[in-house]
Length: 259
Image 1 (cartoon, rainbow, N blue to C red):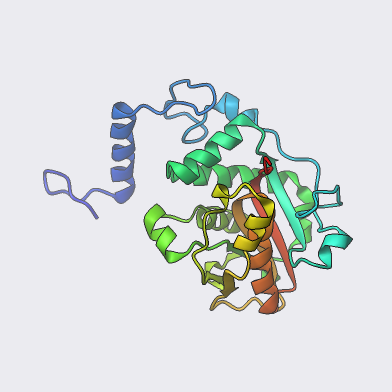
Image 2: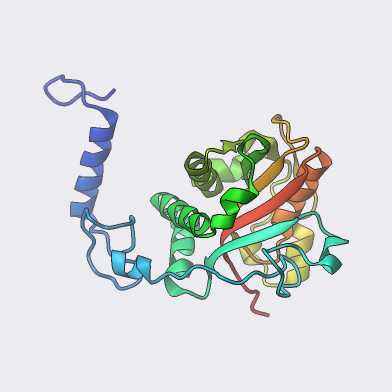
């Protein structure tokens, strides 16, 4: 536990509050959407309550691969013949300006606190889908984040999918199992590849089963964003190979390739 100048022990949470207070003075936080100055009463770390409330949740479902309308996010029968992911749930539209700004600030400016903001929104989405709570069995469902390669994790300092998975597991009483998957190849970042074919090829055979057993389990597979679905599908391949019964992808937003 840290000490103050008088030699007294200072709780870690108090030190965090002091640090955040000082940072807010030196670098005032502004809403990513409307640019208003944020105070301590902000509902999120970088969004005002008004803009955060304006984010609408997805009510429609599309196949993870061909994007055709489907029931409950299930992979359509045609794509299911060639893919491993059983279902994809998407919280919000990437076309929403604040959603795009949150994700870009998280991934490229390394604003770690935004991962918690995104996690909270994803929890609210699942709570609104009341059927979800009836769809999962706590004893047989694992929450698994898409892992980063250790080099990228060391460079970024955190795995946003891990933060999101931990929050979701805690809220729904599900076991979070980060060790169920491992990344065995440090592939190129998908964001730098505008071509769909290159993205799909880039995400092949980069994941393998981890130390935590998934045989007979339903896996809620967590990531911040999906585009072609290829990363989630390769994770599902590894998990199904280890005996997982069902793999449900769950992301904050889904991007469209601009070709």
